[in-house]
Length: 99
Image 1: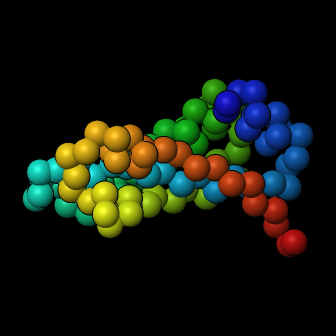
Image 2 (image 1 turned 180 degrees about the vertical axis):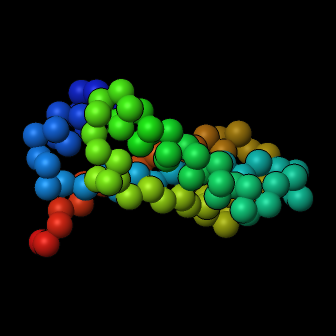
């Protein structure tokens, strides 16, 4: 998806920015991880996408906004593998400046 969709769009439209938001599961049992640890992991997940696009595809790092998100409260400290799978993602949104 990155090479086929994101890279061509970012290379052809220099006025676009890309918001990259990472999310992480919050596995249980209760008390295993803190919210800061989960946010740090989500941030690292998003940052790894930016690192790839910047280093391998030569897209300027200044064109990215990196964010992290916690999973929904009902998924905090869960041992449900399906719920955890839903919360492991990177979401990318194109952002135009001045519009």
